[in-house]
Structures are given as C-alpha cells and as structure tokens.
Length: 513
Image (tube, rainbow, N blue to C red; front, side):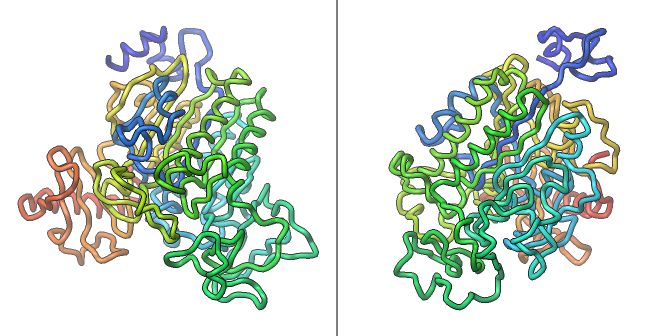
C-alpha cells in the first residue's frame, strides 16, 4: 500500500496530504497527532536479545506480544556503537562526531549539550507537551570534574536542555557517583555526609575494588576495580552520600515507578517521556524475582527484567486509558556486549544465543552488530499492527520525526542531521526519508543502499585527505550481511565515492537538506 492509500484507509484521504496540518488533518478537522509520546531506550540490548527478532524464545515475552500491535523495523540503527554519542545525537539531532568531547563520558563530566541550542525536548515543549526524563542520562551534568558540587543544586543538567522533570542516573551504573539526581538534586542526601567524586584517586578509609576484591558480591574482570558501592566495584571513586547510594537490585523498579508517577501526574496533559533503562548494561544485578528466569545468567535475567519494565509502563498507559493517545517507540542505544568488565558468566552461559543475531560485531565496533537495533513503534488505532518495515532509519531522526508528528516546524539549522521519518512510522510501505546513514564507533562508517564503507583505521580516525580510501572496508550487505568479505579492492571507485561523501558531509555541517 502506498502512502496515499494508507492515509485513505485511515479515513484521511487526499485532504490530509494537502491540509496545512500535515499528515493528520482531514478537511476542517484539527490535525490528529499523538497526544503523548513515550520513548523507551534500553542499554546495550542487541538485535538478537529481543525474541520477536527471530532470536532465542522466551527472553522478551511482553515485547513479543506487544509488537503484534505495532511495527517491527529491521533496518534501524544507532548513530554510534556506544551510549554517550548516541544519546547526544538523539537529543540534539546532530551527529556526535561533529562535536569534540562527546565520547564515552566519565561520571563527573560537564553537561555535553549546549543549553542554548534547540533540542528534542525543547521542541516537544514548544508543541505544548510537558516533558520528562527518567533513568540513564550519561550526557554530563554540572560544570565538570572538580567543579560539580553534588551536595547543592546541580546546574546545568537535563532540566536545562528542555526537560520539565528529571530523575536521572548521572552516567552509567558502573561509574560513580552512584546516586539518583532528581531535578538537579541528589535524592536522599544527608547534609552531614557530603559527597565527593573524582576519577584520579581513592579516599582514605574507603573500600577499594582491588584491595577488597575478596569481599565483592560480583567480581570484576577488567576495569571495574575502583570504588565499591553495594558490594560491586565501579569506575571512579566517591566518598560520602551513604544514604543516597542506589541499590542495583532495585534500580529497574525505581525507574519504572518514577516513569509511572510522571504519567499519572500528567495524564490530563500531553506529555513526552524519555525512559532510559539501565538494563542490560553492566553491572547486571537484576532484582531477586528475576534471578533464574533464563538459562543465561544475569545478562539473560536482566533482559527479562527489561521486558517486564516495559510491560509495567505500558500497562500504566492502559490503566489510565492513554494507550490509544500515545505513540510508543522502544529501542536500544547500541548493540550488545557480552563481557563488559564483570565476571557474571555472560560468555560461559551464552550457549546458542546470539545477542547480535547473525550480524557481525558488537558494541564498540563499526559493524552491523554494533549499531543495528531492535526498533518497535506502536500507536494503537493508527499504526497497523503486526507489520515489519525495512526502511532505513537512525535514532538521530527521532527529533525531526517527533517534531513532525507534533506539528512543530523545523528550520534547516535545527537538528541538522535529523530526518523526518513520520511517514515511515505510519506506513510500512513508505520509503525512508534517508539516502544514507552514518554511524560511529572509533571510526566512521557510511551506509548507502546495500553498500557500507568503513573508513581506514586506526581507532579514532575520521576521514581526511590524508587517508587512502582504499585502506578502508567495503561490504555489500545484500549479498554479505555478515560483513565477511571486504570488497574495497574489487570496487575501488565506489569506495572512493563513499569516502568523498563522508568528507563532504563533514565539511557541510549537516546532512538534512
């Protein structure tokens, strides 16, 4: 069904195409738009970790049923194969590699987003929505290392980039500070036990992941051997804030409860809610009620816990009668990583399970397993259920897409790398708004049609005139989805042309026309 036929089937017809209100306008009626948007972003959840993507049965029982009422995208990508640059791109609509310093942020990083630029949450506020962010942030907050005082109101933070309400984990669960920050204030802080954070040295009298290794309830394999919080080694050090420190086993429940409370409070207003889960990022310490739910140890159990978190939030929408008014997008920030620094037996218990499906690579790599994602879109009564959509899209497109769905004009300089994929969301037969996508790990790669070009190494390399493009990698995904055969020597002109496209995009400063 083409786009016009799809709109006609919804009862919108030709008037909707011509009406000033856009896709959802019908004659004299007001445009029909999603009243609410719920965006759920998992952490390190791979293509193959979601059972409805043809993987191991039983890991995601709720999503497997829920997707039958929506659309499963099969060519969706994160703009990076690590979390900070992906999240930066989502909220700014700009590829993170355009801004230096947007690699994996330490827990005491300054806020990475310029508070003066347009952002996704600001556009949602412009459309009349109340905006909320719950869960993982990892985009920095405060003025930065040695300057952020965790015992006072922390600014700038997520509230300064467009969110009315925030309940955030500053960085990742394996990094200090191990506290929640609500609207810029550490939750549960005792003023007589002030927090100090640094990434250089431990504090006298504080436990140490190396010295006190025998006492840890989850041993580290590499890297996570500095501060010890809740019996688990972390990256970075902290002192104080004992009453404010999180309990890993309770984290998923805390985020779900805060998300549901936001929905309840704003049930009579249009809202945009970002829910960033910790699952299935390390340390994987699921609540005891999920331990043993799968044969894959903590990693599998954390996947099951993520699925249940989604269930509880969707059921909150249903209980309040909001499901048919709410567009829901569920995806991940990058591809999977099995062993990411803790001895949780993730590799030993993996068995036949393939976290990235049949794609090559994983988190931190430029290959499809590093950035091709599960991506589910549901809007009951509007988006036909049970379909799959092969359209090419990137998470950097969410800003322009949500803005279009909410009727917010988007000047060219706003969200410069974000494309409006609203037609693609609504119609499985609609073509992608994109001709190509760019993803980054420690190198950039370009996708055009079925062709994919990875710039030459070493790590950290971006295309420049000093590079020889024939030292890169070229794959034809239509014939070689596993990226096993480098075709750069067989198709040198294509490699040179794609390399030149990357140079042009870097110089232009934007990709959206």
